[in-house]
Image 1 (tube, helix red, strand yellow):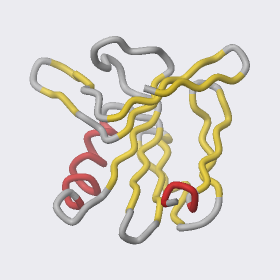
Image 2 (cartoon, rainbow, N blue to C red):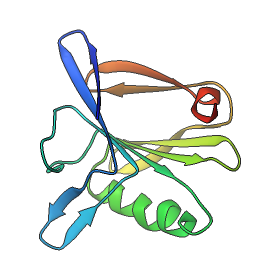
Image 3 (cartoon, rainbow, N blue to C red):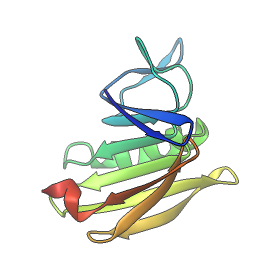
Length: 126
């Protein structure tokens, strides 16, 4: 886990931590960002979810998880394509995802836990 802070707000970043939606649904995003520190598992929708795409997971991540995360109200869904060195990001607006970033260069700007965060797409792959 990694922590970040801005102003009086904090956010936590988790790698492969279970998010228990209900008794029948458990997700394990590659990376999750929450506004609170988690002890065992995530209980509420994360602010952001990052999924790293591989050939074997592309349909699941681009279609199935896209819809599931939207339905569960994850604010940002970020898909990372290591082979293409590209990032595609979506923000939940009025119950649907709108693409806000689709590039291999530039700064992906997010508002996480009331903090403005910038992610340099090129730096993700170095």
